[in-house]
Image (cartoon, rainbow, N blue to C red):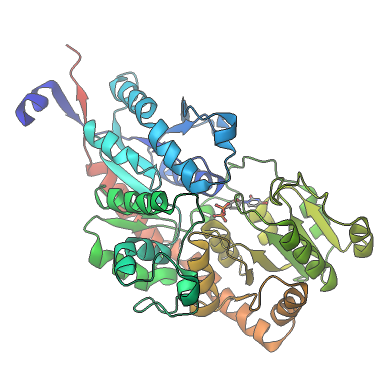
Length: 466
Ligand code: UDP
């Protein structure tokens, strides 16, 4: 059988890469940054994307874009249950993605394809790539430390840490210090079995791939990288932080960033502003939203706050803020729908980042040396937040919940006191390490060279057209 296939197909080595991001902002950004990085190394780039949340090709004139129909209805695409949505995408995209790859592989007018690079959450793409004898490299857009925990899910279940029991929340997780049970990366979903299935798909299909790329760097996550090295036999490449390769990086924002953020920041004192943003997916209850609002108002520091439409469940935007709220601020707060986040974090007026600790936000904050107030919502964010506060010690968590007094207290600790000064020093050191790893001879720079060498050795196959 193998021989028969070999006689019908010819081997090809190429310099074209097909990249396939899963359509969420925190995944599209690093995939397109990776595309820019690999393009600068001489590869041609083809981006295959779903029709849902499609990137804007006009921001990337050097790349070729192909859309696959995901078949999501409007209500499916706006589902709050992320687990169900990811599962649906992994089912609906199989046939259209396969058809698209077959066409791309057969297109002799373009350079031969070297490999597919797809998001770890698009785990279905491993089987499709295998069936076409196309090597697949995985991009994991989250951190290495949280991935180690996902990879240990079967063990954590065996030991009774998962599924999480309310009574065990404060228990340390043996062998995963400093994590407690409440820090394990889970997502609330209608059917928890689907979540565990998804994590298994993510981990197992990554193990079956031809390599794994991380938006992280050696000095940040060395112990986790060593763990992965012991348990995964595939090569891996920590080449982050991606967004620092090219400044400014091209925009892959799905929402339009409000540039008034920068003119407003220009008027604020150095390191005085709290930038608050909870990413593209997290949602809050109205009560939580109001505690945040009053916590920010009462702390007396200027703040720039991203309230994404849809952030507050059941609200369009700011309707639930009492009318006197904006008046009490007297210009001390600026609320926007979406920020040019990397630019904001790099602005000298920003003194702290109140974040949900999505991996991109966490890395972006570290790269600008901005200390964090951590408010993880779900999935890997809980692990990232724990590393920020307890391992790298570059931020604080709200210790007794989302209450306005606690918010005020935490902001004061971070912005003013000795504790805050030490945190700023530590994050400045990490920032320095993030800069160094990208320079000639730095760990990420070397890892990128190894990745380029690895891709160049891969071979794909194409059907003979006779
Ligand atoms: N982001 C942005 N403007 C905003 C909020 C977020 O440009 O107002 C970007 C941010 O820089 C990051 C991405 O959106 O690159 C969010 O990714 P992250 O992993 O932090 O969180 P997620 O949205 O996946 O929860």
